Amino acid sequence: MLDLPAIENYVAFYQCQSMTKAAERQYISRQAISKSIRNLESTLGVKTFISQKGNIAFTQEGECLYRHAVKILEDVEKAEKDLEVFRLKRVKTLSVVCTGMTQSLTYPLIREWKRRNPDMELRINVATPEEIFLGLHNGIYDLGIAYDGMTDSRIGEIILKKDTVSVLMRSEDPLAERRKLRMEDMENRVILMPVVTKNYNQDINKYVVHKKLHIQCKVSPSMDILQILPLVREGGLYMAATNLFSYFNLGDDFAVREILTDQGMPEKKIRMVFRKNELEDVQISGLVHFFRQNIKEK
Image (cartoon, rainbow, N blue to C red; front, side, top):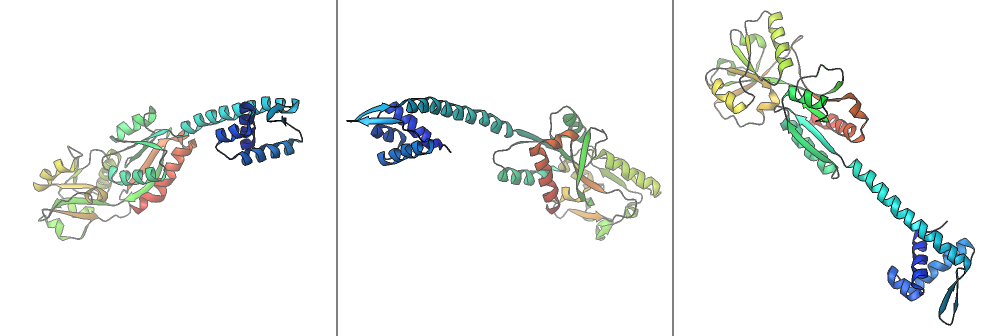
């Protein structure tokens, strides 16, 4: 079988008309290039040149080999360029979007994914669930991470994690004396819920009605926890994913108490959403698998 370095050495020898000059061009010793050409002749069963008194004369076989050798090297160079195009196509940019309430979970995993896959370009965005849906539908985003599910049949989803729900209150609130709360404990109170978890908020309202609880559930005017704190200082209760509160230093003025779940109480779920046909893409399916394996540990 022909050896590519041997073909390169032979072309250099033919063009230089000298073993010594060919060796210098190939950055190898004269003995090495001489041995390379002898091995090539042995493999092909031909004599490629005749040397008389320092003059080199190439045989017909040697001339024929040179023409084919040049073409082989040109084809190899072209193949390398063509394959480089495919390699560059694989290094695509994936656009991942998350809600404000899921970014604290998303960012560490994205950084780890980027560390493991340095050739992958990732663009991170923050948007509302409605914007995520439109972005996925219009091809702006490849993957989304949110609490709310998508109702469109073209959008698939995978449950990444079931999250606990807690209530933020003043530390002197009577409810703060309890280690954990039931929904019944918040009778005759007003509960604020994040504006970005529309579907979950509706499920909570249905649960309250079904249980005949006297709890008023309202959508908070902001998704910014810093803007919620003044309302909580005035006696309000703010119910959201427990994960959200763990990323803020709320100080001694506030308390966070987890809500106990019972049969019928809606669960808060972190979902990865995507256009269904996108999972055929190797990079996207790989990122989905990575999130499924790792987000439960965060």
